[in-house]
Image 1 (cartoon, helix red, strand yellow):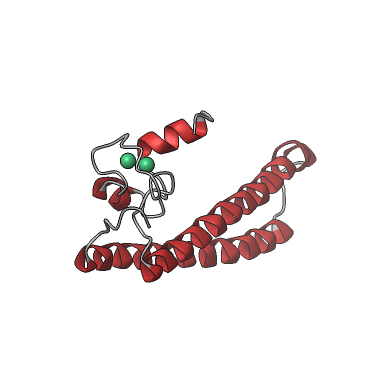
Image 2 (cartoon, protein in one colour; image 1 turned 135 degrees about the horizontal axis):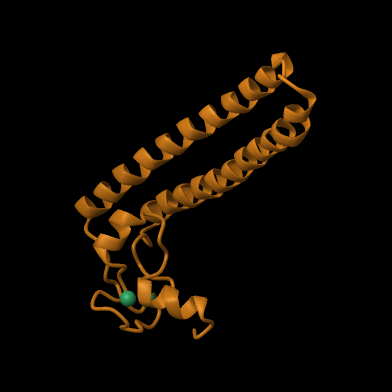
Amino acid sequence: MANPKKYSKSKLNKFRNLIQNEIETVQNDMEEIKEGVIDSGKASESYVPDSVYSVHMADAGTDSNEKEKNFQFMVRENSYYQNLVSALKRIDNGTYGICKQCAEVPRNLCTTCPLIPEDRLLAVPIATMCIDCKEKDKMGLL
Ligand SMILES: [Zn+2]
Ligand SMILES: [Zn+2]
């Protein structure tokens, strides 16, 4: 590595705790959604509508929207979960907190390059780039 700058062990431990908490939260969320999907299925079976209109026009739509929403939520939670797991791996292999774009040659777009600012990691523990690099990356400038 061109630049050996890294976060200290105690800071990395702080990030590790944060990520592990997030993993637990996501796991709980996913459990709840799974249970929710089953519950809403049961509920709609036993549901007796007031009129045919309400079933076809309102409930049919609501029910599939609900499932669609749950599905989207699961997809999002699952990819967040994967990102959290790989963040833990980066802590273990010593690359956590180092901006992907600045690791070899710091671009010095922010004051902490090549390290991702601590504030950002506390807010977004799965971040792999500093904000400026991420913005440039999104615009295709890197
Ligand atoms: Zn960077
Ligand atoms: Zn930077």
